[in-house]
Length: 383
Image: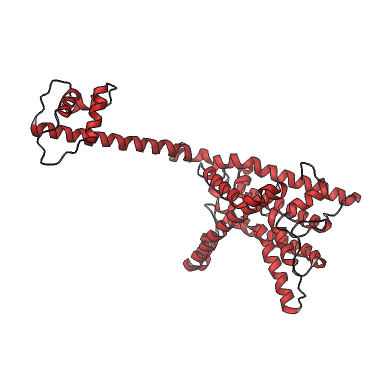
C-alpha cells in the first residue's frame, strides 16, 4: 500500500495535487482519529482507489504521506545544492585522477608567480611615496634602494631553490622552520605567512584597481566596490582548482608581462636615442617636505627599503606548491622559480630606472606605471 503511495505521489493528476495540498495544510493532532472526508477520499485515491481508510488507519497513512512529502522536498534541496556545488567547484575529481591535474612550468608561472610579478605595479611607487617626505631632490635614492632589493631577490631565489630540492613535497616557511627551529617558530612563521597572503591579496587587488582608475579616472570613486567584486571573482576562479585557475590566469599574467617588457624596451630605446621626455604635471603629487638628518634620515631610508620589498611578496609560493607541478616536480618548480625571479628583476629594475628618468612623482591619483607609460606612449591606447 505504501509503495503504491510512493508511485502516485508525483503524478500530475489534479486530484493528487489537491491531495498534496492536504498533506501540507491539514492540522493533524495526535488524538485525531478521523481526517476530513475530502482528505480521506484523496488519500484513498493516492493509494489506488481500492482502500477503505477510516480512523487511526487513515491517520497513519496520512502521517507517512506527510513524512514522504517533506523528505522529497529535502531531496530536491540537496539536489539543487549539488548542482550549485558543481557550478562553483566543477566536477568532483577522484584520487586516481590527481596525476592528470598537475601543471606545466608555463601554467605554474601564471598560478604561483602572479603575486610576485604583479607586485612590480606598486612596489616602486611605495618607495617614491616614502622618499617624497625628503623632497623630489632625493628621488634618485630610489635607484640604489631598487638595486638593493634586487640583490635581496637573488638571495631569496637561491635560498628557495635549495629548499625546493630539500623538500620535494613542499617546503614553505612552516615546514622549514619546524625542522630547523622547532614547533613554536614554525607556528610564528606560518601565522606570518597567512597574514602575508591576506595582505598580498588586498594590496594586489587595490593596486590593480588603481591602475584602472589611473587609465579611467571616472572609476576613482568606485575603487572599493570594484576591489570587492574582483576578490569575489578571484575566489570563484580559485575554487575551480589549480589546473583550471591556471588556465584562466595564464592569459592576463602573460599579457601583463608582455606589456611591461614592451614598455621597458621602448622606454630604454627612447632614453638611448634621446627621445624620452618627462612626465610633467601629475595630479595629487603635492606632499609636505621635511628636513631630516641623522637617525631620522637613516630610518626613512630603511622605511623606503621595507616598502619596496613588497616587490618580493609571493616569491615563496612556488616552493609551497611543488606537488602541483608535473614530474620531475622539483626540477620544474625550480625552473619556474628562476623564471619568476628573472622577470621580476627585469621589470622592477627597469620600471625603477625609467621612473627616475621621466621624473615620476608619487601620487594616489596616477600610479607609477601610468606615469611612465604616459610619458613613453603619450595619450594613446597603450598608456
